[in-house]
Image 1 (cartoon, rainbow, N blue to C red):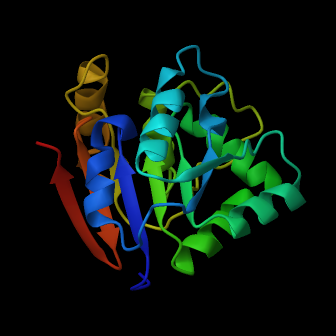
Image 2 (cartoon, helix red, strand yellow):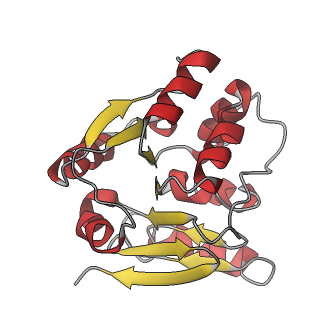
Length: 209
């Protein structure tokens, strides 16, 4: 993995935002964050999107929203290039990956990350960096992404984040994912108060006290 890569992967960004301030490789104030809420579109509960945005603004970031499902390929490229940080919020991981692939955005995001642009992934936004999102079918409805023909995800990390571990209402689902896939995949369970920090090839789990 490229040594200049910085990933901040979490379950609930609003709960761990101070950890980003402590670990970020860049000064966050006045930087532009490309904020992608696309995963939340098919969901009935979306309060976390607003909370994530507020948490970013409290850190001094300037939030520019990019809904990949609505934007043109050109708008996506311009927005990702202009931003200093990329943020993908939670929601349905299958729908998110479908839309990223449909617009070619997953290649652009991968390119920006590999060039050293810090990336924040919340829940679905964390899981799409794994090699595959097949394991997510126990957590998300797959039928909202009828055009998704492959579970192959961005593959920027070799491990598989498991957000909301031991947190309501995902307590039983989290254990089911571990019992089903734990023997096959390198799962990394995190609670709503933890984040996975990836710098180069180094994985660290940090917890907000």
